[in-house]
Amino acid sequence: MLNEVVIEGWFTGKAWHYAGDLLFRLSNYRDRQRPAKPQVEGREQPDYVTIRIPASGVPLALQKGALYRVHGFLQSREYKETLGDYIKSAHGLTSMLSVSDELRREITHNRAITEVVAERLIQVDKPSSGASTGNGRRAEAPEPADGAEATSRRVGRSTPPAREEAEAPVAA
Image 1 (cartoon, rainbow, N blue to C red):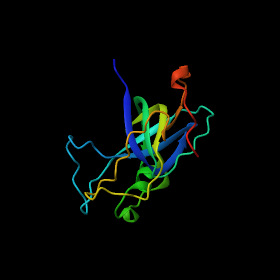
Image 2 (cartoon, rainbow, N blue to C red; image 1 turned 135 degrees about the vertical axis):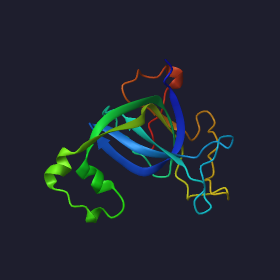
Image 3 (cartoon, rainbow, N blue to C red; image 1 turned 90 degrees about the vertical axis):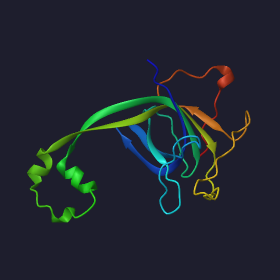
């Protein structure tokens, strides 16, 4: 079965570690031929995707606002969320809830998350000053010429690249 993903997006600045892996969020604006998301305050809204880089011991310095291209595959995982964890991240009048600590731990809900497991990460463009095309969409970076701007690194547990695909480390 085919399970291969290539996606580009801007690093939102949100990153965390889970089970030794690095996870971070990219914002991605849809291609013009695809249905657009509704605009909010006159600006097109991006889709967000979580990227997971398996623990590999390779240090990685992501730059907020930089454009990255990720090659990898989709993975879903299930987990249980306690009522207490849900209430912590919920919006609204949660302070009006009265639930014992025991019930906050005991009541759980099965949740699922889908993420892209990165096998290759390429920094396509450095962070910009937030340039916009005028329609609320950030200016798209041109494709770099061979050997130019883009820096790339294999991540995770994949095999090393062939000689003609040798990759430079992502700039710090």
